[in-house]
Length: 256
Image (cartoon, rainbow, N blue to C red; front, side):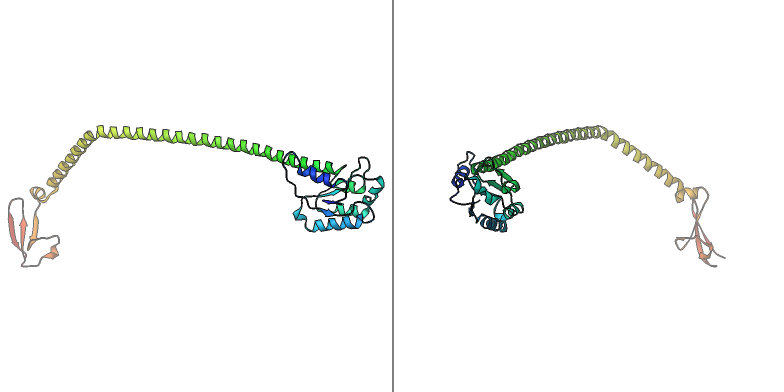
């Protein structure tokens, strides 16, 4: 806040802010400056530059003056003050204290209000509007979150039911399969045994039909030398004794 402690609206502004009905707490830093007379330009612009140098500590600047004669406003019809306000990095609010007259400083300020208490009301209403916006957004976010949670719960319940239904169906199918296997297994095992017996009988008949004894009975013979079956004629030499096995009996021969 840029003002003089002797300014008429200084105390009104502070009390209006601190005693607001909404419990808002405002931190006010007072930067002393002349608000009328020949030193207004130098002191006010110097203080504005001082605040701008540490702008991160503040949200706005307020120029408070209060009531007074119309001639006292001439200090605020000043090019350097107007330039300092126009180039100020934070919003500047003026409460110079005249209902009718408007100064150049009022024109370039972010918001011009007629009295210091009007500036205080504006700041309080700004906070109230901000709080209302937050409350509204909180309600919207709460509703969206509740809807998302509700939809998630429904989805989980649906998945749970599907999983439960699928598990029950799988269990029923497996139970029916086990019952079927239990009913069919004795018959299937009997058929399997019969088929294996038939296969064994066929293999036995094949062995009997194709075996050496059956071959000999069909008129064939086996010739051996020293107990080994001969397959080639070069396996014997003249003078070797060979044995011919017939279906009934054996013949010993000498190779010539």
